[in-house]
Length: 432
Ligand code: ACO
Image (cartoon, rainbow, N blue to C red):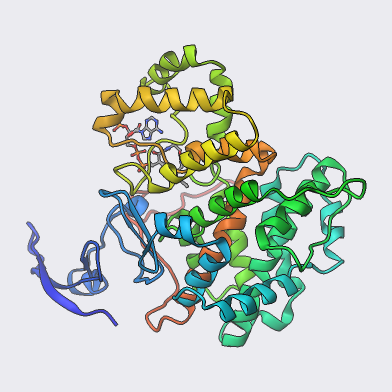
């Protein structure tokens, strides 16, 4: 599967003989040293907490060049996809490897629309939650629970089952996120409509009531669609790695995506958009920005500038640039050009990008810095931002899970450890 392009020799300062390891080249990006025979050859393990220098798989789905600030889905730059394609094109591309023809797209969208309605029994799951439950806690549970509804798509070794599970997850997510919202505000659930585009349908399920139908605004639909495109996949990030790890044991795709949602919830990952908006709100005014930025630089202070920094991007996140543009469009459309949140965000960006602390650590705004402002302007409640991220990322999780299942090199993910506990010792005599 991988072509060896060179060899790496690893020398030890103790008596362990040197080890030769194959080096593989990808299409673009860094080469990777195959460490799999390290232990059998040397009795030693590689140590890499946080996977700072570890490629956990080979993948053909998305690619990030962190130095350049470049993101590709199946080779296409995110800027081109975000300006010329919609989310359904993007989903098709991520799942199948190529952009759809007009006929393929019509059929794909029809399949998704046909599967958008969830089992009626699902509403009883919702009713078991407190009304003030965090939407991510509901989504973790409800997506995992889908596996108890679909026994006909749980055989991970059957490609037809995998396809069906993929369709269902993609189609159900907007309905489930919207149901979580409706439940939280005590409004009746809104059923999906087949005649509407995916994102417009989601907005209608969020905001329509039996008393008043939601008026679809194309600019706002396009803005949310862009959020979905920008969040659709991001190579081996924490939640995708979680999905792959869960899937490596043979767990069903609904359980795996549920695990991904749990990981995404954390404030260092998908929870950052909610945290970034809360941070901007707490700053309160442009005049307080400088003091706030100063406070996050203090090593004694555990707080961070949310929406800044990224494990891989050491340049501006290309999604942040697109999101800033969308932010302008949405605020214009809604007549909110003087939105104080946006002004604070622009000022934070200006102050941080001139500050040596951020520049020297290569900390730039990431996509979440602006997505919270956009979502808030669209009427999305703050605690639903991460749920919308989960909705967008579901297609990436499924594409990555499917790629892993059909990879002949796939094995259960089972890291080792550097043990630093007590060496073997005997239990002392114990009184009765
Ligand atoms: N604000 C202030 N300082 C920061 C920030 C930040 N947002 N991010 C990193 N730093 C500092 C660290 O304190 C550290 O400084 P030091 O060298 O003096 O100790 C240095 O930069 C390196 O930080 P690490 O934590 O080692 O970087 P890592 O790659 O592990 O973390 C992460 C990346 C988690 C994204 C981090 O930058 C962060 O917490 N950012 C804020 C949360 C956020 O926006 N997350 C969204 C990620 S994008 C996404 O999920 C869609």
